Length: 615
Image (cartoon, rainbow, N blue to C red; front, side, top):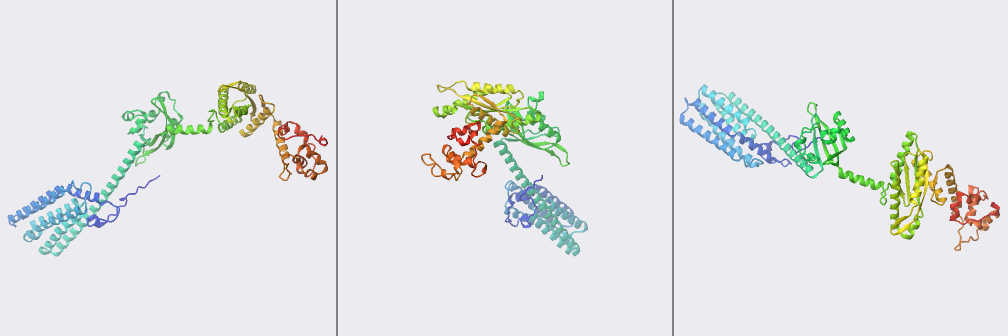
């Protein structure tokens, strides 16, 4: 994974005129700090160039003393020293003013310094060169060449002023050589001046590019530092770093504060020991810490690794992210990462999860958690060849409490019921509320069938005891339906349905008992469904009048069907005849089923009669 950083100086494309200080370019580059760097570089070597000018003038004075009047040499040397000193002190004077930023005017004014120095030095070749002997002439050209080369190198940060100095002095030297010796030497001197100017410009450009990069890097470092300070001051995260031996290096203050220790105290300590705390001696490490140790050992990156950390005896949860570090040669030098305290977030997530899986009234597991627990128990039973059990509990006469005393009393009664159920549960059992007055029990290991049945009887007995709620003595009961998996259902959904059918049988028997699932319960349920569908009026069936009597349509039936319409209602009579989708066909085989278990609930819903022809 690579990252590319862009900045205004990422690509060193420097405008020539801006570099020379001729104008300000209309771009996003801030040339103020760059020109300040140019001015500071010139001021740093100001005294050096002053010394070079003074020494050069003294050497020329010694070389021309036999041929040139001493007062001329002294006057010229004094002038060089004066101009050189003026230029040096001028540059030193503006050093503090241009330390951070400089204007275009500041750079342009340095051109006058270069021209002045060049003009003073051009006196020597123009005035003294014509009267010099061979030794003096050689000394003059050597000193001038060295001075020009030194200026081109030392003062390259101010290319315009330096090029002006080189142009004036080099041009004077070229003219003097062309006049006194030969045009070829003058041309050579001119070429030498041009080369120095080009070199000075190239070096000045390189210095500007370097300085621009330094400025950009400093700005980037400052931005990163500000972000890190804001990150550490306002955020709950911190940085951590280890060496190749997995020891803490440069302990972050926030990291140390989160541990409740001094940063200096943990520098050099094993990182895992710092995180393990008191568990380091016992070796009883959390799973997250073991996983981190394995990743550190294998030098593998990790992300969002959750582990518990004990700070002042209190458990905190940290989320750790880290990646290995390597040097330029590819050698492993340690790990670096970010840690954060997610205790509050974890507690909030646990609270949300609990709200989604626990009943708010009773605090018992709700239908979702009961289903998940039953699915796990079914999987374990299938894996180990054992059995699990599921009980559905329905409270008897609870609706009467709600109807007479109100729902608040009913809610408090449900809380009392849940308290009694909790006292009956063991580590092998899970009790939950499915909704309303229905509860459920998951028995993880139901190998002992007798123990499961005893638990069912105990639940009925305990829940049937009287309750004292708001100065009311309340009597309710309980009915229980039991299903054993995987015998009565291969999946959690099937097992719940089987227990529901068993509970239905218990309620049909009057309540207050428990009934285990039997295969015939499923057959009876299917018969009830078929009968109920058969007895429901068809969309085209005639409807009773406001007195509940069927009028005018019984005569439409075949003669043998008219007697069924009177006692059972016309809609039922039609369904008897239409059962089996065979058209107008009499079904005397359906009537006896209405008086069996499959039709008992229909007796309570619709009036039933007897048909002599159906017996």
